[in-house]
Image (cartoon, rainbow, N blue to C red; front, side, top):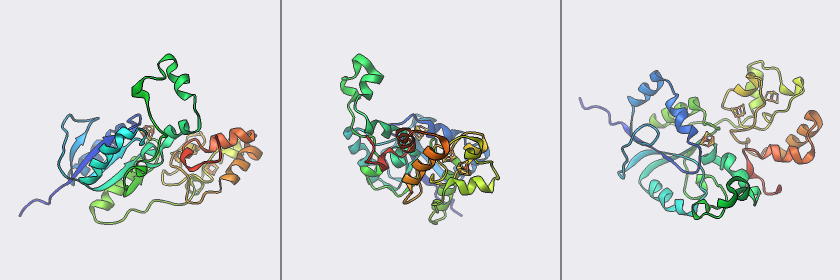
Length: 253
Ligand code: SF4
Ligand code: SF4
Ligand code: SF4
């Protein structure tokens, strides 16, 4: 009897901190070894030196598209991959990198006299889907490793994974966590996309909406709640609400 062919999987990184790759290596020995029974990892810079130019079943792309010079590499990955999955907020939405899209003087602030060095040339930080077709996204900063396993196992079984489209508040209530607003704090879980099981409020810190917002979020209501219930100024509330969703907003400069 011949062995079932394993799916060829590769990981690629663009503009990011590579924290999502590290999160993968934190999957735990049992989960990781279980995955390796079904997939063959053919490129993964954080954990191996081998690279490939062969066809890939699933390409995982980390990081945002923020340099025109990266477009050709993304297109080349797309052309030889059956599925492309953007993993982590940077790749899925532009993530925290997209904060720069709303300011002009960040280079001078960060790099001072080196601000005009050619290698720092970049355009707006955009989701990978701005350059190539993306089949699925694993949300979060870092990406949620349980969701990663859920998505991969569904795809390997030929099923379509379902990504939650309800707010983090639902999961927070299921865990019976005391709401941050009841404790005089703020929180963005009211319109943040669930799927993480609300770990941040459970650990005593606000949800920062690292998984992005639900579809058709009522951002105006979030800003109102931050102002009226958490005492934020209107500007601070608007800036806060775009922390991981800067690409969704065109009204705040
Ligand atoms: S999503 Fe967060 S952890 Fe992942 S690469 Fe981007 S900044 Fe790093
Ligand atoms: S702590 Fe945040 S996520 Fe939890 S119920 Fe309150 S607003 Fe919603
Ligand atoms: S609770 Fe909010 S900030 Fe924390 S992991 Fe979930 S979406 Fe991200």
